[in-house]
Image (cartoon, rainbow, N blue to C red):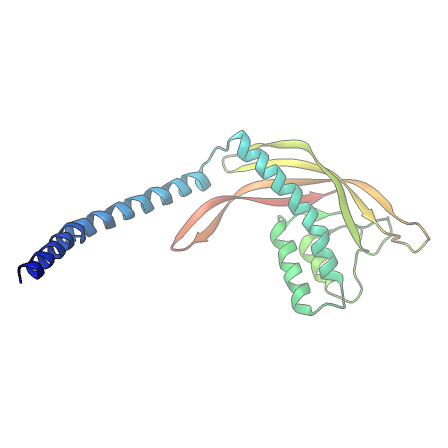
Length: 210
């Protein structure tokens, strides 16, 4: 019996030593809550900061170039009548969300083309018809013409320069034709929902194309 008693005693001692107490659990819970709160505050400070670092501005310039490049792909989907309408409608949404809605886009290849210029909403609405207002195109050689700079309490702006390339837009036998264009881009504060929180974060939007 003494042997079993000793074993039972050892097991009991080990259980007491290693089993977490209510106090330990409460301390752990408090520590985890503090870590979570600190992380949330750091994220909020990062996203909601009023003044951006040079590294952040450089990253947003890269985002602006990528957004412009993506626009050509979205237009291809938007005007592709062989695709399901749900895909084309989604491309419509992506294009409109990438721009400042009031800006004008000059995207037609030649003067006298059905659409010489248009605001973004009208342009994408016409793109959902069976007669695309703009022939297929791509953007190339995108670079920063005017570096991003502060323009207000909660806004930054810059300018991109690039080539818009059309593949035989007139059917005249040309393999391609390109135009040099410029596009403004803006960095503005917008409300975004992150779980239970709503933060005012910086977001890149494209502006006028000319």
